[in-house]
Length: 256
Image 1 (cartoon, rainbow, N blue to C red):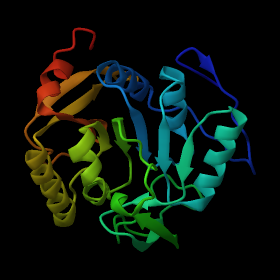
Image 2 (image 1 turned 120 degrees about the vertical axis):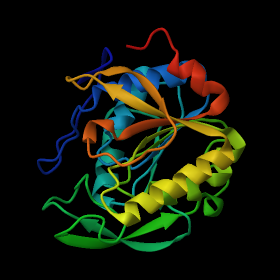
Image 3 (image 1 turned 90 degrees about the horizontal axis):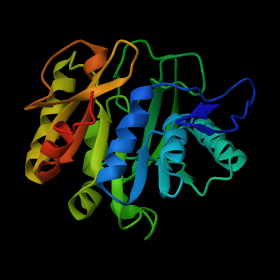
């Protein structure tokens, strides 16, 4: 597998392998790394799709991943080992409190990327399993580096809980966040979006929507005041940036 000009070994385990997806993410990571030093925190590792992009863009960056699904964790560990990467993946999610939750699965596959810890986030779950989630305050010292550049959050509805669970990190290191927030198709989803917006206002963060081409390539960033109500899955990815850096990002002449 080649990503951003670098080759990686992709293990195949019981027919399971990671896959190249979201080419826009590689460009987003590159742009954010140009603006800020520090580690990459990956909340929702799944099969390591983003992990490989970080290694391709800047192999010197520290990387710490969090993933509650044990099947995904096992694969990510093997992916890291096969490519001799100095990375860590912690077998837990991040949330506002340290506890055990149900991970609901919606596909008949153990590594379901649509799985969610939010009860009834989607209809017709096919399975569930108990998983650990942790507030960052309860992590051993040093688990998350003191300097964090980017936090990626892809957790199928649990974004609010991740932001609350990482609040000490956000206040101290003020990283960029790359977040997927799916359409607010229920009142509960809208309430969580609005709660995120309140946290962002308190942190003095701005919202930038990632604009993609028909071929899923990065085209630019659009500043918005709120996530709003929309039903286009192509408009669900955002950079949340400290306001002092948001204008620089949005007006980057290299975008587009």
